[in-house]
Length: 450
Image (cartoon, rainbow, N blue to C red; front, side, top):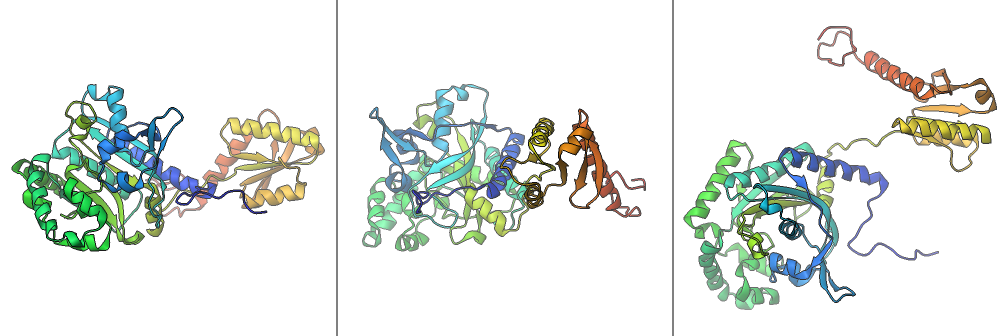
C-alpha cells in the first residue's frame, strides 16, 4: 500500500541513528556559549509578520521571496520565523531584559523556515544555533562573538574553514556609499534582474547580495564599502582586526560580504568552508546597532551570529570529526515463562532506577530469539531466568564479549552485585590493556608510579 503522505519538500526527518550527532553538536555549542556568559532563550516559531518586515527588511530576499506567511483564525497576519535575531530582540524588549545590567547575552537553538530551493544541507525547515549580545558598541564585543564561533568549530574538530570579515559602516557613512552604488548601477540598469531594479531605488546594497549570475558579475566591480567608511567605523574595524590578531584567529578581509538582512551595521563576518559545495558559508553574523530602537526600544548596540546545524553536521562528517558513540545496553535479562518474566521486569525496573541501560523481553520471543536479540543490540551482559533460577534465587551472568560466566544473586542485592561486576571488569580491562612499563600511561591502574 502506498504511503498516505511523505515529508513536505524541503524538510527532513532526523532519525534515531542521527539524533545523537545533533545532541552532541547542540550541547557543545550551548556549553561553550555558557562559558562566554550566554543564557538560553526560547521564542515562538511564528511571530507577527511586521516584526520580520521591519527588522529583516522589505527589500531582502527573505521578505520578498522566502517567508512563510499566513492569516490565523483571528485575522492576525503571522509568519513562521525565517531567522532568530528578530524574535530574540522582541522577546528581550517585551520582557524587560534590556533593562538589566548590560551587556545582555542570549543564545538559542531552534527551527526556522524559508521558502527557497532546497540544496545540499539547505532546507525550507532548518535548524540554527545563534547568539546575540546587547549593550556593547565596542569592537571587543565583535571579537568575543567571533572567538566563540571559532571555538565551537575547533571543539567540533572542523578543519579547513576560514573567517572572512568586512565592515558595511553605519547609517551616516553609508549614505555616501549608497550614492556611489546608485551611480554605478545606473549605467547597468538594462543588465539587472527585475528584483534588483526595484532594489536600486529602495536599498542599493541588496544588489550586492543577489544570487542571479549576471547581477553577481556586476557586483564584482561595484564600489567597496571599505572605501566609504567614516573615521569612527574605520577605527572600529581596525580595532577588531587588532583583537583577532591578538587571539591568533586568522581571517581575510572580504569587501564583498554585506549579508542578506537589512539590519546589519559595521562589522559583518562569515565562516566559510569549501568542503560542502559552492555556497560554503557555514556561519554568518554581524553588528546590528539600530535594530533594538527600530523595534521600539532604546538605542542599544548589538551583535550576534547564527549557524545552520544541517550544514554544520554535514561539514563535520566530511572532516571525519568524531561523534560520541551511542549508549550500549549493559544487560539483557531473558525470561522463560510468566513467573520469570515478572521477575525480569522487576529487575530491569530496579536497574533503570539506578541509571543502568537494561532491557528485557516485551514482544513474547522465545529464549533463543531473546538471546539473538541481545546479541544484535550489543548487550554487554545477559542473564537467563527460568523456574529453576527463580527458586534458587540466583542466575548465571554472562559477559557477551569474553564468554565468561559468574553466578549472581537475583534478590535484593542484585543491582549492587551487578554494579560491582561492571566495575571489576572495567578495572581489569584497563589494567591488562596497558604495558606496566609504559611511562606515558596515566590510567591509575598500572603498577608503576606516575
